[in-house]
Every structure is written in C-alpha cells, then in structure tokens.
Image 1 (cartoon, rainbow, N blue to C red):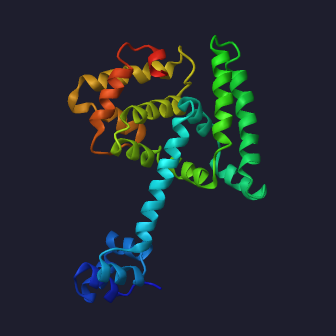
Image 2: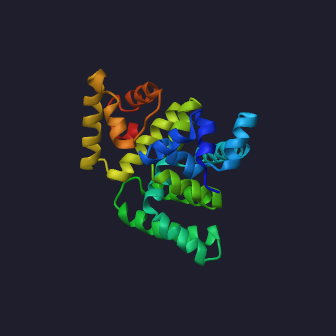
Image 3: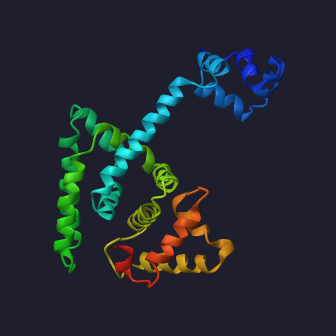
Length: 253
C-alpha cells in the first residue's frame, strides 16, 4: 500500500500539507520513504522505535559477510578476484536458472573456461606450477559457493566490493582489505601476473605520488575503488608496507 501524506507526516513530524508540497518539489526523502517503506513499517517504527524486518535484513547481511570472509580466508585471493572479473554475472544468473539452480554444475563450466584461459595465458610464465596449484585451490573454493554467495558477489561487483571492504575495515581486517583492493584493481585494469605490465607500473607510480602529498593521499583509493569510509588511513598504511620497495612480488605476497 502506498504511503499517504499522513503516514509520511507522522514520521517526519510535519503537516500533511507540508508533505504534499515536498512531493511536488520531488524531495529525495519522499521518494526514499515511498520506495522502501510501507505504512506498516512506519507505524511499527513509531510504536517500537525499530522495524523488525530491517533488523532481520541487517542480521542476514552480517552473516553473509562473515561467511564470505571465511570463504576467502581459505583461498588464494588474487586468483579468486581474477576469476570474479572473468565472470559475466548476468549470464551466470541466467545459466543458473536454465540449469535448474545447480551452482556446482554451472560454476564448474566457468571454472574450466577460466582454467584453460589462465593456463594458456601464462604457459611461458616461470611460476606456472604455482599458478596451477592456485587454480586447483580455487576450484575447491568455488565448489563451496552457495546461492547467497553468488547473489552477494553480483551485488558487490557492481560497487567495486565497497560493502565487503567496509566490513573488513570496520572489523579491523586492514591487511585483508588492502590486498583485496590491490588485487581487484590490478586484475580489473591490468594483468596481475605480468611483472612488465604497463598498468602495474602506472599503478605504483600514481600510488607513490599520491602518498607523497598528504592532502591528496586518499585520491587514488577513491578513484579506483569508490571507497568512502572513515578509517582509510589504515588502508594507506598497509599499502605503504606492501609497496615499500616497489617490487611486484611484494604486491602479490
């Protein structure tokens, strides 16, 4: 049921006439309330100072975050991130529907494609055996994916994993957050396994120049990750540690 002027007036502590004026002015707060809340939601909040379904969603989101963190904690993050960027999520969701919801079957098809692509891409690389080992480990992680994981990955991909990065920082997993940012951007904008890759050199160059200017030190992170959190200094400190001798091996440790 659509919210009436009286419903909105009660929550904003204003007159119904004032709400009508705000509607005509296309105020964002009116659109927000209309889009995400029902009459029952507002009444419940006025009576109890909370909305139960919102509390449930918050709890559910936290559980998904913890579950996703545990999943990534036991795999090679840079390869997992590169695989995420290899996936066409819209196509994956469509294929899941066609395959009757079998995540294992559908994700295995993508894994085989990615495995062949990556092994061919790095067949001349001196670390090919390490890459192969990481790919085999990746398969184990992918077989643990649930529908919730897939949905969470799809939503986070659209915002450069800001939701996940925020969760890591709020829980003081600064090193994990920093490495995820670096891996995500190295994979998204370049080649995370090629030491001579132009993007990598540009990445380090701009990073170091940003860090020299304290007033500008967050610009690089914001530009590449859309990261807007209060405690970005910890991320900067970890980036300084990881890139202190500007060697590619340090980035991938």
